[in-house]
Image (tube, rainbow, N blue to C red; front, top):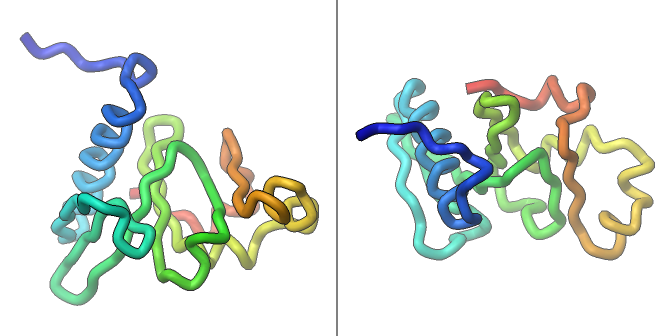
Length: 128
């Protein structure tokens, strides 16, 4: 009856649901209660609350920076190599190298992402 799904076989909405449950499950280990949002409130797919704080989380398929998240005090979370990773978006801005800042993707489109997270971001990423 129970058969694990192959992530690659899921459509985009199913992947977002899958990622939400994986991330929120890991956050629960740290005392967070996660609530999915119907509309990306202040850029967040969900909020997560523990006894002391609330965080806004945006789900992504990979490590991403985006100008639309600047100054929104938002965390980005994604799965990579079957591990849940999370980081404060604006912390990543302080680490991006010059070649990204001058890229067309960043300067004209306003976002940049990596298929595999570069090691220079390791200091700002938390593995859940």
